[in-house]
Image (tube, rainbow, N blue to C red):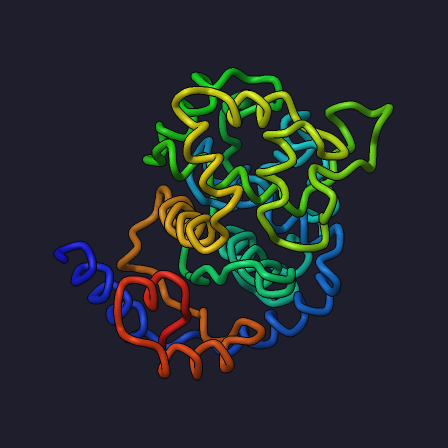
Length: 284
């Protein structure tokens, strides 16, 4: 109960500050860039993890040229796109990375809606190299990396589900272009089921390990048959991740300008007020 009250008060505090009008224009622009849950949308969903995990959400992924690193392979195009948009609209790179993910999720079918917060501090100081999880890492290593920024086991398994829309190009170049489940254009639980049963077009070694490790297997199995539960857990995990290194009370909520937000607000007002409503709907 105390958590729900605190969460609600946090929403009210964020809602008190008015979202700068420029973010509405950016939302429309990015919606066009991400049409059809395309490669740019998929990369935008992935980028926040690479910016936030190793040095906080500070935009260094773009500003310090971290996208050229091997550990960030495949993000060069989205880094260039979002970097140019940041300059074009005179907004922070850190905010652009997080906002772009929120827009991409709003575009990809069946995906959850995450809050779009702005007001982070940018940094051009490069993060330490080699601190991101890799596709051949052990479960111990993966849990440790994410645990260092406050994410628990459920958070990790939920975030990995973003591979539902992923296509691999660098894990095995000889099989470049193969997706991590059979429905890469749709945000669904097919990824969890197919990784578990080894029926996906392609499965990362780390995903296979997470699907069977005693610490994560039960959560993985639950998400494979429980889309609402996965979406709720993903939202929770992203709300933790997207503010790493920042004071959430200093950020402004721009969720209301995301594509489809008006429709979601209408649905939210008709829904019972409770934990599920706050976890899954955009409320203004």
